[in-house]
Image 1 (cartoon, helix red, strand yellow):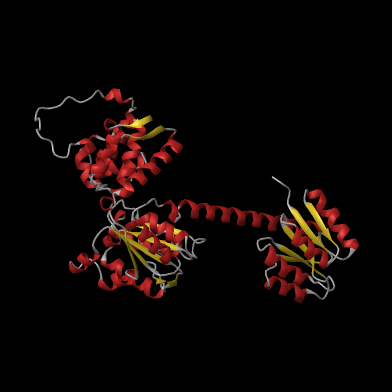
Image 2 (cartoon, rainbow, N blue to C red):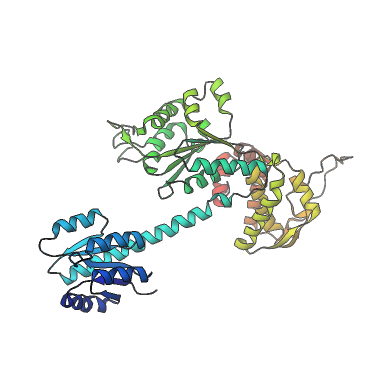
Amino acid sequence: MRPATLLIIEDEERMRRLLELVLKPEGYELILANSGEEGLKALAESQEIDLILTDLQLGKVSGLDILDAAKRVLPDVPVLVITGFGTVKSAVEAMRKGAHDYISKPIDNEELKILIARALELRRLSQDNKALRDGLRERFGFDQIVSVSPQMNEVKRLAKEVARTDATVLISGESGTGKELFARAIHYASSRASGPLVTLNCAGIPETLLESELFGYEKGAFTDAKKSKPGRFQLADGGTLFLDEIGEMSLAAQVKLLRVLEDHTIDPLGGMRGRRVDIRVIGATNQALPDLIKKGRFREDLYYRFHVCPLHIPPLRERPEDIDALLDSFLKSANRERGSRITGVSPGALRVVKRHPWPGNVRELHNVVEWLTMTCKQGEIRPEHLPSYLRVPEEPAHRDSSPQPLPPLLSFGLSVEEMEKALLQEALQKTGGNVSEASRLLKMTRNTLRYRMAKYNLG
């Protein structure tokens, strides 16, 4: 890693020499300018400046002029200003204009070293955070949502337009269609991308705990509340809150949520007054909310609050042209991440895949590819590599009711853990991700299935 480069702008030769003697032994590369004009020239010519140290009193071109130029040319580079007697007011003005800090003459050498080290560390952290945000934008951007169908491309176009606003969004679609992917893409394409993205699956939390998870609670709000806990709304302050399966919220929680959407105020349990939060809310549901309204299970006013920017993701069966693109993308990822050497899909296997209705949508297809990385580690995927439930003939002419012998399990070359994971995946695929149905197929309790799903990072 290259040493940090400091631009020092000081018109007094004695002070300039002193700064050089103090900072050179610290391992910094120094660019010395003896006037404001030389400082501006150095700013224009060098792209590797990590920190600027400038005197405020420089003559025709002042330290404030240097600061203004630095904010235009190198906005992320910290500027430290040196103040003399009678220039404290100018130092305050420099801080208002964006200077990182100031130090007064006579300069304390140790204090100067600490200020510079701290400013450089903050800049490094800022650069790391920017790189992380850029990486998240790339990883969760709209380009990562694979599609070639006109329906999905239109949804992506609308979602990009929505991302430019701060409006509440409602994403609807069957389980496994990619609602969370769209929520993440909207967040990272929005002006809130530098803020947090907090998610909550309303169906995965008991009704008695949902309100405290959303709104938090104060110390003493109930028997076990030994200390205050912020809710998801507070954690998402300055960013986005994604509420998945909002149709599962209790009516009591819906009333509180409606208030947040109306005035951005939350009421923690046990709190004496509301708290303002700056958030955007994205909701998602796999249910028809108008039907829930008719049944009295969802508030109509909340529905219209969410329905400002509705996005509907069509199921995979309605866009079969996306299957090839998704399959290709998933297989490339599997080869890259798992070391598989799958070269493609045979026409016979592709016909089997194309005729399946995919009730679990894109998630089910992804799980099938996970299976294939175990049954076909290299070469071309053939029909026999696919899960058995996919290979059921569409319209068999004659059905033999006699039991068919099972293939030797050891012939698959899988470990016990791989077989267990594959069995769980097949049950989840067959039921479209429905945990209750899958647990019945596997003859185990929901809690046991949930534990094993967590063990293998499924769902």
